[in-house]
Length: 203
Ligand code: IMP
Image (cartoon, rainbow, N blue to C red; front, side, top):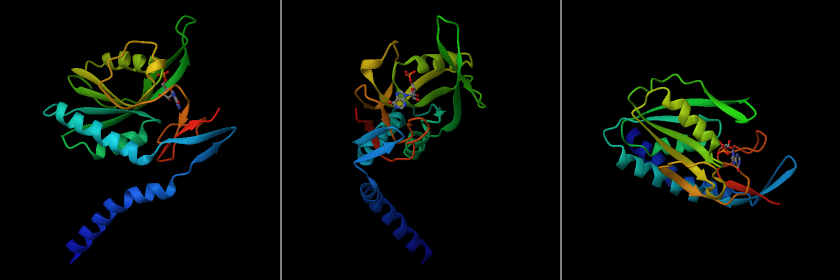
């Protein structure tokens, strides 16, 4: 009896989830001094995240990857991506702390909070967005110091026209124009991370 009820519940959860997002979507949101309009709805995001997860499942069979999620922005992407990962894996979290570098290098972001041993591992960095790519470049340099076997990048979003450095990004859920966005983990001054949809600033 319990088993039947549980199945009912799970079936409903699967059917109701897209409807739930649909009901929640707002066409525009206001964060502080800026207005944003919805640009990528939750259903599209979820489909692209599942697609990326399936690619990783196929590519990394037998590799037991370590997913390294970059907080705060990648928290939603990480949670949804990992739900679709069916190969054995581990997940760990790091943060990037900004500090001023020399005048030639500008602001450097240092990786903090790493408590996993990366030696000999296949590491998949999970990022929210690659914009200029400078953050990812610093991150790759920091991770290389920990002697992984291989480092791959999975980014929810990429702004291809903003890239300033050459990066080999294996997994991108969606490429977007140069506009500033919020939602699905991304913020404007700390706000806006909570929305299941992605919003673009209105000029
Ligand atoms: P990059 O070093 O220029 O590639 O910047 C990467 C970081 O900038 C991301 O991890 C985000 O935290 C932030 N970022 C870049 N573009 C956006 C955006 O459109 N909205 C919110 N944050 C962004």
